[in-house]
Image (cartoon, rainbow, N blue to C red):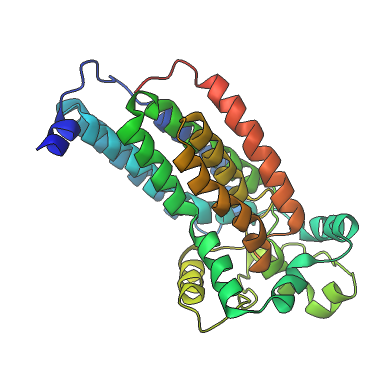
Length: 320
């Protein structure tokens, strides 16, 4: 009964309009709509992209309407959950947009070669093929969305007054990353290495593949222990939603950095030390499974830190 009372106790001053996190999504939607109209003839199926956005607007309006009729913590959480559940839809949408531009992986692979003295994504898994290590890498990579849920639920239960700003920081960070991906077509090693040829990569040659990914989505087999449970779970996840897009900077690292800083700001040492090892392992796992170049990781750490403090300052005064 106490839980039901907590969830459904009426909100004294309910929001009349959109919450901050919804405004972040709307701003990104406006940007992508402009992109669609300008790139209309280059897109493979712009009508489907428009229809998807129309459905999102209807869902957002419906959740807003339910909240206005029953303003309480539960309906507020439903609005936030709707935004978070849509993130896997927005991610492949970046591919539909950025494949209209020439691929830039040859530039980033060259930088990787210069900075790292080689291609860690090409050699890491081969040198560390132990089944236990492989499964740990897969688990840490898969922890991405569960970590978001843990942090949001922690704030919902223990720091409810700060939930509005917290979700704004998370959602706005995502949409800023997605904006970069729309404009910066870098696919990452698992796609580029196959397109460019492993022999070329091994010899430090990084040819431009131009608009290859406008019509191709083939990727290298995910490295690691192929009999592992989490290996197969990761493979299924990739088959469902992965696309040759969104490599630089790593949003896995950037968003998890944001989550770690939110955990620190919450004052909960348990939450902070729960998120920390996943971030550390994720820095290795994203390279291990060939999702990212090592330079993507450093860029993700820096970008996530900047976004957290920028959006925390921008969102000061946001209430739940």
